[in-house]
Image 1: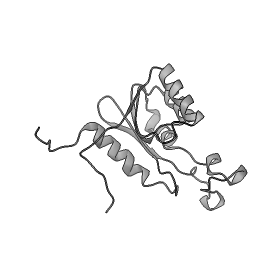
Image 2: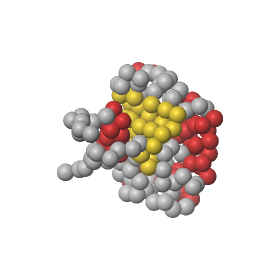
Image 3: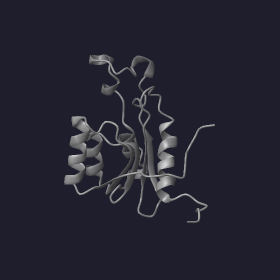
Image 4: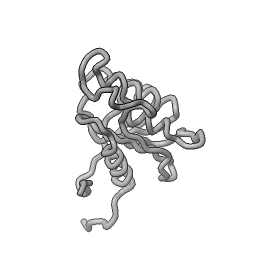
Length: 158
C-alpha cells in the first residue's frame, strides 16, 4: 500500500485538539476539544482551564478535597469549546474531537447543543461512574461515539 502524502480529516482535527490541550495549565490532565461542522470547518476550540476573569492564583490545580479541589473550578475543554462558539452559532450536526472521553456533565451539554458525533483519543477513566453515565447518555441520545485511531502521524512539541 502506497503511503499517502497528506493527513486525514480525523488526524487533522484531532491534531488541533491535541495542540489546544497544550494551552491547559492543569499539571496532570491536559484536554483539548475541537468542534467541526459537516463541511469540515472548525466551529470552535477549547481546552480545560479556570474560568475567565478569575484570579488563578486564588484557585487550585490540586486533586484535593473540599474547596482545595480543582474539580470544583475547572471548565472542561468541551464546555469551553461550546461556550467559545462565535455569534450564537449553532452546533447542530457537528462533530467534537476531544483528547479525553467526555464526563457526564460535558456529555449533557454536547447533547443539548446538538452535537451528532464524539471522536475521542483517550478513555482512561472509563471505569468511573461519571464516564459510564456519559457513555449511557450519549448512546441514548443517538450520538455516534468512536475512538480516534492513528498509526502514521505523531504530533510533538519542539
